[in-house]
Length: 346
Image (cartoon, rainbow, N blue to C red; front, side):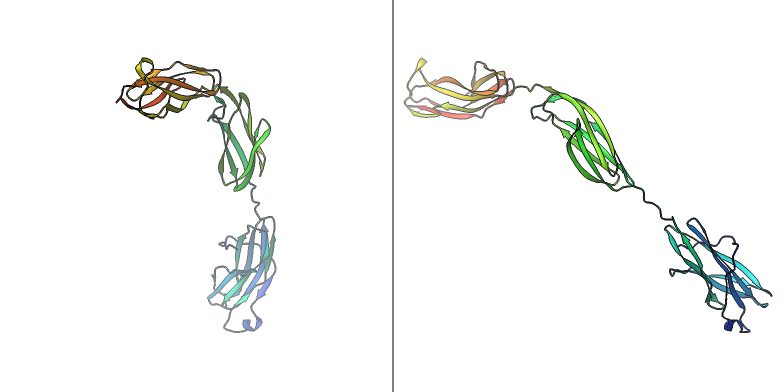
């Protein structure tokens, strides 16, 4: 209970408590009484009043007193001074304001010149407890690209939806669900003190448009929605080359002379494409040298082995040590690993 300073005077009732009779009969002690102890409630505030009555008998009498409560609290000690003859009185009061429903009492305790406690002023106040405000959530939703264009074949093309959930009078656990054209695609809950961000990523597989909605239904209901459109672009064809090899990759011995007096070898490689396209490529040697091969045309995705026949010097004592690889120049650039080969003619 919070003690307040005294303000003003009160109109008081009729309750009276006097010092014990035996003590009052002592000739050296002045008479001290506490009358009209009263509680006056105004909403959740209660004013307590009392009148302290003294007969100074021509002397100066200092009365020390304090307010006490039914729950054991004691207010500050105060002093009143009385002088003169006859009956003198002063009105004192205290004020308490309650934050919760409460009932009890207060009284005046005289500490000197005699110690005694007045009658109790009882009170009962209701409706003082403040209602805790209920948390309330709201949601706002945005889309990073409402009209996106890209490949829809499992690549990095995506549509990203970002949301902010805000809560007043939090924290609160907010339940939510993402709905794509009325169909739930994800749901969950999140603990929010003030605000939290959510994200949902859509990976389109076909062109089209639709509506993404984020709904919340706990602690209250709210929703926001955005429209989006996706245009799937055709994927560019990609070509690659692998499994490059030379046959024979190594030879040490007589080199039968073939056409034009050369010892002939065959280079082979596998070209792969992701879609219909024409592949331009060439064979390369580290000697250096290269050969532009005829373009290979594909009607759809697939792979094909290509080869190139070439000759090396076949005279006895001729040695060929070199490396070979394949380079693609269209529809994209690519290069195979280099493969060595060694021919020694005896």
